[in-house]
Image 1 (tube, rainbow, N blue to C red):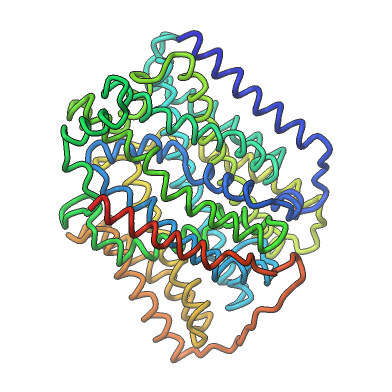
Image 2: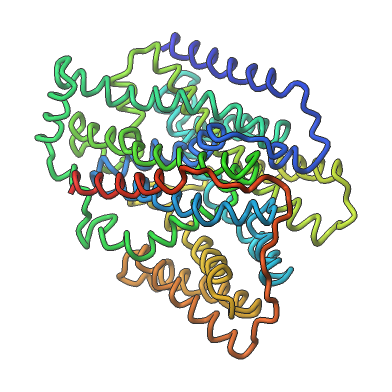
Amino acid sequence: MNLAIVTFALFTLFVGIYCWYKMRSDKFETASSYFLGGRSLGAWLIAISMLLTNISTEHLIGMNGSSYKNGFVVMAWEVTSAIALVLGAVYFIPRYLKMGLTTIPQYLELRFDKSTHTIVNLLLILSFIITLLPIVLYTGAINFETLFDVSERFGITKEESMWWMIVLIGVLGSVYAIFGGLKAIAYSDMIYGIGLFIGGLAVPFFALYEIGETDIAGGLKKVYEHAPEKFNSIGSSDSVLPFGTLFTGLVINQIYFWCMNQVIVQRALGAKNLKEAQKGFLIMGLFKILMPLIIVLPGVIGFYYFNDSLYNNQDTIYPELVKKVLPVSLIGIFAAVVLGTVLSTVNAVLNSAVTLFTLGVYKRQINPAADEKKLVRTGRWASILLAVFGIAVAPMVAKAPEGLYQMLQELNGIFFIPIASVLLGGFFIKSISATGAKVAIFTGLAFYLLTTFILKVDIHFIHVWGIEFVLNILVMLLISKFYPNTNQYQPVHTGEVNIEPWKYTKPVSIFLVLATIAVYYFLS
C-alpha cells in the first residue's frame, strides 16, 4: 500500500506542475480571462472539462453504489444526457454565444428584469454550496478513507479521518479555482480526464479478466448469469428509477443540467467560437453514452463479488472493488485520478459560484463601478469564503437510505426545476412576464419542499419534478395575464466570438440520438 501512496503523490504532483507550466505567463487582469479562460477554449478542452466537472465521486461512489443495489436502471442519468447535449449544441449554445453571455442568469435580466436575474443567481449559488459541494467532498473522503485506511494508519477514528480528508480535498480543490481560474481547471481536467477513462475502464477490465480467468467476455457472462435482473435498464414502477420518469421530470432535469447549468455551460461560454463549443458538447454526448462502463457496470460486478453483504453501506462498494481487482501500483494512480475528479468538480463549482456572485451580484448590485482587477480580487475572496462554507457543511452529510447519488438528485430538485421552468418559459413563451417568472420560482420551491420533504407524497420525486414544471408554467401564464410582459427582448449578436456553426452538428446529433435508443434497446 505504500507503493500506492507514492504513485498517488507523484501523479498528483505531476498534474500540478503541468498546470503551473501552462499557466505561468497568465496574469488574469480581466474578468473574462479569469472566469471564462479568455474565451480561448477548444472542443476537447471543453468536452473533457465538462466530463470531469460532471463525473466526480458522487458518480464513481454514489452511482456505482446505486447500480450495485439496483442494477442498470440507474444508467438513465447518464445515457439520456446525450440527447440533452444534442439540444444544447443545436439550440441553446448558439444563442448564448450570440448574446455574449458570461453567466446563464444574464439572459434572465435581458428577457425579464434585474431582480429575476438576482434571485436566480442567489438560488444557484445556494444550490452549489448546500448540495453539490458538500456531497462531492464527503464522497471523496469516503473513497480515500476506504482505499488507504487513513484512520487505521494514523490511529484516529473514521469520523476524524473523514473530517481531515474533507479539509484536505477542499483546500486542494480551492487552489485551482482561486489562483488559476477557468483555464487552470480546464488544463488539469485534460490530464485527469484521460486518466479517468483509462483508469475507469481498467476497473471492470481487471475484474472481468479475473472472473473469466483471462476471458473478459466469459467474465461478463458469469456476472450476467449471477444476477441477470441487474442488467435490465427498464425500471419497474416501484424501482429507484422507474422507466416512466424518463418522459416526465427527468427530461426537464437533463435539459436544465446540460443546457442551463452554469457549472457545465461555463465551459462552452469560454469557447473560442461556436464551432468549438458545438463540437465540445457533442463529444461530451459520446462520452455520456459510454460512461455506464465506468459508473454503472462496476457496481453490478461488485454484486458478483460481494452479493448483498454491503447493501447497508452501498457507497463503499466502488472503493472496495478497486482495492480487490487493481494491482497495488495502479491503485495509487487511480486514486490520484479520482482525486482529480473531485478537485475538478470542487473547483468548477467554486469557479461558477464566484462568477455568479462577482458578475451577477457584486458587479450588478453592490459595486457597479468595480474595475476588472477588482472583480478578479473579489472573485478570489469569494472562492475562499465559499470553500470554507462547503468544507464546514460536508461532514453533516448523513447516510442516505437510497445512496448519496439519489440524495443529491432529490436535493437538486429544490433549485433546478423552478429555474429550468423560468428559463424554458422565457425562451419559448413570449407572453410570460417578469412578475410571472418571479411568482413561479417561489411557487415551485414551495411545492417541491412541501410534497417531497414535508407531506412526503407517494409519488416518485422525478414525477414530482414533472408535475412541478407544468404547475410553474401554468402559474407564469396565469400571472402574466394580470401583469403582462412589457419587455419584448430580441437577442442580438454582440460579436464576442464567431458564431458560424459546425457543419457536422446535425449528422452527429442524429447519430447520438440513435445510439441512445440503441443502448436502451439492447439493455431492455
